[in-house]
Length: 214
Image (cartoon, rainbow, N blue to C red; front, side):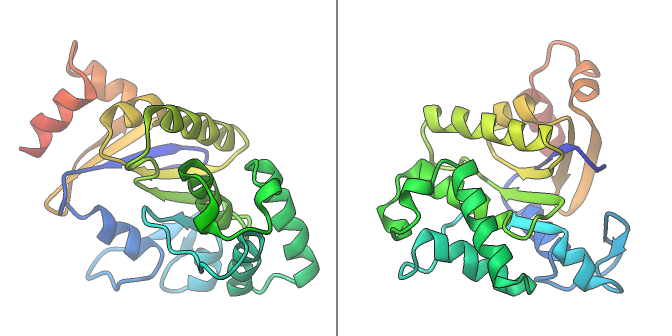
């Protein structure tokens, strides 16, 4: 994937999506190959590489005893950001994600949509260049899914590179400029969404996905 992309990483359960993400962010040791993030190798320049990545997991894993503002401030501590800068950045993100009025409450008191926005805000507290989203709209209703789509489009238009996994193929078709499909740990195709669909005229992304992952 290239800078500025919204890249869809698709595959059936067990295909290797989560393992790949874990390798990118250094949670597992890769057995072969090389990974670099904007030119920084994750093995030889791991500090620089990891600072460039923010990850928004599917599951909520906030400290329930912290206010949501403190959730952001606590996360920034992993990146050594000065306290004054962190506080300003936290307030900026709360405003950007329409969470200012909830700054002092615990995450358990947020709606589903607000929790998803908090997940994104936390991933962005250290100003990463790459945002990894693991099933960002899993389990949400249609209205919230469309709201999150618009938010991701806005982030991308502002220069954020996005790596997206999803089982909602209409979501990938709507958002992603480029797509890779993985099956049993192997990439079976990687190309622009437009070219992928054009190569199978009249097919939806779901048709293509089923054909390539059987």
